[in-house]
Length: 184
Image (cartoon, rainbow, N blue to C red; front, top):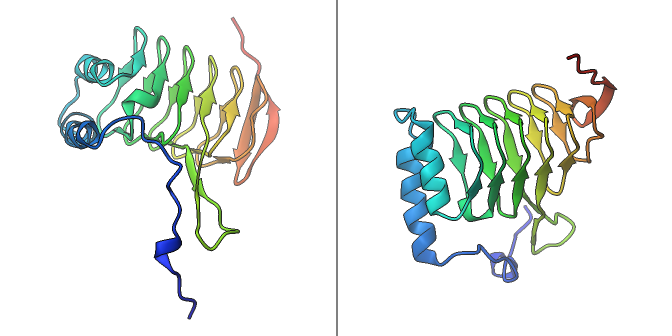
C-alpha cells in the first residue's frame, strides 16, 4: 500500500477571491436557491448571482438544481440557457458568451491536480465558452479549455483541448467529427 503524506498537499497559492465568511454565506445560498430543485425562478437566481459579484446579462435562464462554486468568478453574457443539474465548478474564471446552451448535467471544471507530484498540487485555469456554443447533456469541459464560437460538444463527451469554431466534437476525449453548418 502506498502511504500519502497529506501534510505535503500544496494549495497555498490558490486564492478563492472572497473571505471565508462570504464563501460560507454563498454555500448556504447556493443550496437554498440553486441546488434546491424546488426553486424554479430564474430571475431570482440571476439577481442573487449579481449580488455575489457575477456579471450576468439579459435573458439568462437558469433551471433548477444548478451548482455554482464561486459566483464572483462567473461572467454570463446575454440569452444563455443553463439546464438542470449543471455544475459550474469555477475555481477559476468562467466566461460564457451570448446564446450559449449548457444542457442538463453538463460540467464545467476549472480545477485539476498535478498527478506527477506527490503533493498532488491544485491546478486551476479559466474556461471560455464563446458565443453560440452548445455543451451537450452530461458533457464535461476540462480545465483551461476554450470552446470557440458556435462549437458543439456532444452529449457525454469530454473536452480537454480547445474546440475550433463552427465544429462538432464527440467522444472521450472529444474529437472533431464534422463542421457545424448554421442555416438562416
